[in-house]
Image (cartoon, rainbow, N blue to C red):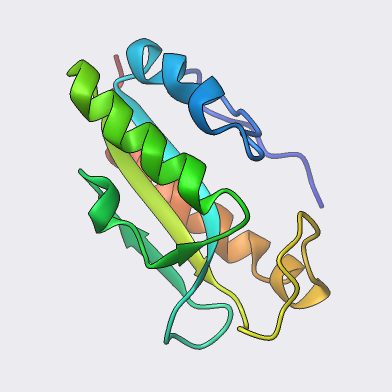
Length: 127
């Protein structure tokens, strides 16, 4: 995969299954884009952009850190500091193993995911 130049206003962090460890980022950033796998009724490989405000706005089943992510959102809400959130949710097969490896099928979707993220970034204020 080729190197992609990011705008100065963008930082990338692999949150893995960080959950509450990532809560401090809610105080540092005004906008956060989360990319995650989800089980839903959409065709595997489908990409959705959601703008969740509460944990109940997230898809029913995210990847391996589903509970940590939802709890983190609720905690940030209680603390009164929730940045603008975008969730780029990529549908996976219900028969796919839930692990940290990206399947070859989803690896082919990465350029489309990057395009979606850059469309979001392009709409963000430059400050």
